[in-house]
Each structure stands twice: as C-alpha cells, then as structure tokens.
Image (cartoon, rainbow, N blue to C red; front, side, top):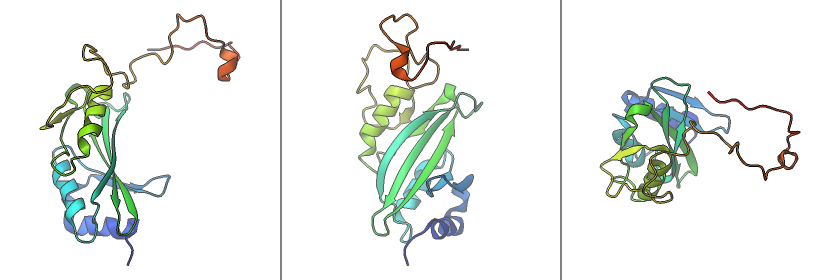
Amino acid sequence: MALTNELALARIEQKGAHFIKSSETSYDDMLCVESTREQIIDFLHFLRDDEQLQCNFLTSLCGVHYPERTGEEICVVYHLHNWVDNFRMRVKIYTPENDASVPTATTLWPTANWMERQEYDFFGINFTGHPNLVRILNVDEMEVFPMRKQYRLEDGTRTDKDDRFFGRDGNYEQTFD
C-alpha cells in the first residue's frame, strides 16, 4: 500500500507521537509536522529509518524568518522524500531569534552540509555540530543576515529606478518600523 499523508501521520502517532507538537496538511497537500529543536535529530532519524515511512532523502532544508512570532522567530524547514512511494513531507521547528541554534542534520544526510551553511549565511542559524559552518555566499566580514526581515526591501536612495517598470504608479509611501 502506497504511503499517504493519513498513513504517515498514523505511523508517526503510533511510533513517534512524542516527537510532534502539531501536524497539518498544507495548501499543497503535503503533510507538515512540527517538532522541537531538542528532538529534531531523533525525529528525523526515526522518519528516515522507519520501515514504513522511509523518508530517506533530504530534498531541501531552509530557514524562514517570522518576526511577528515572539519567541519563535526563526523556523527551519526540512523537506523529506520517500523514493519508494514517492511521498513527500515537511518538518518544521522554531527557535527564538536571539538563540537560533539547531543541531546539524549532517550526521543523517551529508547533503545537509551545504544547505545548513547557506541558512547560516542568510539567516544566522547556528547548526551545532556542523563540520564547517562558514559563510559560502556572502563575504566573511558581513555581520548581518540578509534574509531576516529586518532590512528594507529596496534602497530608498536610488534614483535610477522607474516604478512603472515594477507595476507601481509611484504614488505610494512605504514605511518601515
């Protein structure tokens, strides 16, 4: 029997209910399960090695900044794939912005190496235990994390932009807190 969202969630609740905080089926019909950073590696290990779930491929790992979620501003999202049943699922964990530290998944998937380095580079997520957590796209001297929603989207001092080419009429005022 092919793995479905319902079967996967039932299996997780049967064998690993202690790993999950919440679950939902998202807009794209993908099972999305929330866990904690303290349990994330054990949970991912369970999802990878369980004989029914077999989520043995880490498709992607990304960071998201939610400044309005007090105490849970930084999110790490893991997209997993079961090749046998062509089943995909999403796992999320949240951390406070001032303590954006998450255990590395490189112990489970070596491919997490570059993905974690990218999210460190752009969001400042510290993947503890990572073998070489250094910037890979931004300059080493950079002290900020550009994908956090703390910065203006556009440079207000530029005069070479014509808003008409960006779908704007030019009669707006953008404010930032």
